[in-house]
Image (cartoon, each protein chain N blue to C red):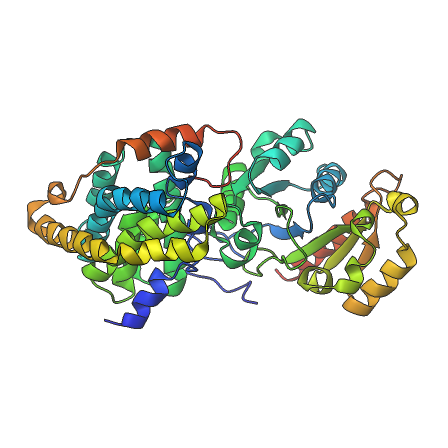
Length: 227
Length: 224
């Protein structure tokens, strides 16, 4: 990684840790995962949990609409100027991995427009199990799957499940209804990911997004320590 | 001058944001003007001799060292549709980022300071070619070719068109791309002394109208 490499010039090129004025940019965390696994709901819950203690913003990557951005606006989890939608031309994984320029512009413009930020969440459009974020775009990434998508997904692996900095297994409240074996999912995830963390989550439960929010805070502490 | 550098700049995977744009193909597909390989060829031919020629002229002129501010104004004057101007500036900004990382140059940095929200993409393309050690002919080829390869790739996604047919369309257009590049470079050389008015100003009204309609759609696959 070249996060602390500084380019001279009018604007940063990639994951530069400094903004043009020399100040340190926000931590960027990506959220990816299959369609319907609960990425947007997790983003909304994180915004509610963190917005009073942090200055944060969200970039959504909708595949063919602005639905995700509009959901966040409707839920009023953040003021509208803190939410930006990127259009991805039928290829959501391209916009977060192979050609990150539109997303980089979106995160930089947010920070230029609303002042220094602590955290930018970049939500991918719903994609397949191979979708991961470029290290040129985000500092850490979360992969979101759900129990209703099949309890064999952790066993199948793939770059998202295997390499994401955090794996969320979402909608655990549905497990009894769809016959998903949570213990098996946990064992398979452990086998695929070794020491990388996994959170089993139900946003309908009282704990909700608490554990993931704690993980995000730890990432922020580590980011601050690297300054 | 390196032929390999030209391949890097012309590569469809060069990370400069083009994948999210259809070059008007999405609007044309919806309107029924592109429905298969034959009508894709017609669309690309029309685009090549209008928007493609204009872009190639601008790119060649920028590669020759013509003042980019004057060229950007010339591009505005040749782009009536506000939606297309916006798309061209967004793509220019994205291309500038990729080019600065790939071929660092004081000229590219200066362009970024002059146009923080982006100059027209063909102008940036010409300066990127210059930074890569390429000349006006190379810049014009990149501009002309991507003017047709973008819509062809997009149509494969939009219509599930056979990708072999789409690529064959591009191959059949090659002699016409050559001619467009010749015209564009000749005009760009005239513009060095004669000013930017010497550059081609061909127009495709249906592309401009289609872009305005497309920008207002609530649901679309491509940004333009």
